[in-house]
Image 1: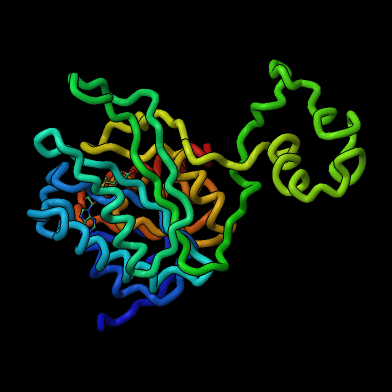
Image 2 (image 1 turned 180 degrees about the vertical axis):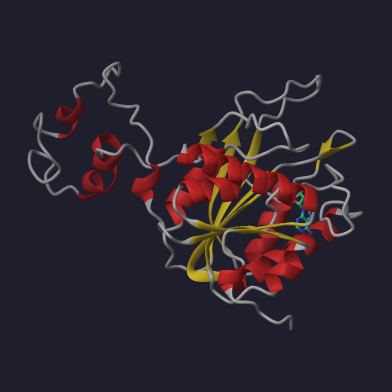
Length: 295
Ligand SMILES: C[S@@+](CC[C@H](N)C(=O)[O-])C[C@H]1O[C@@H](n2cnc3c(N)ncnc32)[C@H](O)[C@@H]1O
């Protein structure tokens, strides 16, 4: 077993090396949430001997990711979680189904699947395909380590749509009983269904519960030669599943979007990438964000 290093020596650092090896040296239960996007299967050559993604078969790729995510399960707290953003791949016009292959392998290895969110990209690159629809989404799989996990639904609520001023149902509360009433009063008073779901969905002051389709434009960060996370996508994950002051881990940190977002949201981060140039880009990006914040 690799010797474990104290969490403090990794906190708020970009660590260059293989995600599996570095994770083995992390202490048990030191991380609140993982937000990451693994290299996609045979998508891009990152030019490192250590890289994941260049395996010869989907099975070998899934096996390597499963090894990593099993080790990551150890370092996540019992209340912790994992958000994995992952896209698919066509070979000879046939979709491989890679996101679900990886997802099901992680379920089998003990992670509990909570949501299969869709990241819809309104500004996705056009494509010349004529035999199928153009892909403009990726998956965001949300897993927890245990049944009892930290999830702050209020932190990521979204605006109501049903009872907006423009809505035909602008009668609002009147639809649920006495106009201006509450689930406790009026003709629907005591209706548990109304209280637990419909009332909450329609009138919660912070908005309705987050939906599973997230429509977020691609990031404009151009220094990295690969797709970079949009900060708002990462912010949703962190706000919902990492308490303030907690620790967010990204084992495939790339240009450091998870780290930069975690710091802006007053969380600690641990960022791993096997390419030194990307660790340097990420560090420079974080320094620039700090400079901007202190100006
Ligand atoms: C899709 S990119 C991540 C982009 C990142 N989400 C961002 O916002 O910049 C995947 C990253 O995984 C890194 N990587 C590939 N194999 C790795 C390994 N075995 N250990 C650590 N990092 C690895 C690559 O160098 C690349 O930076």
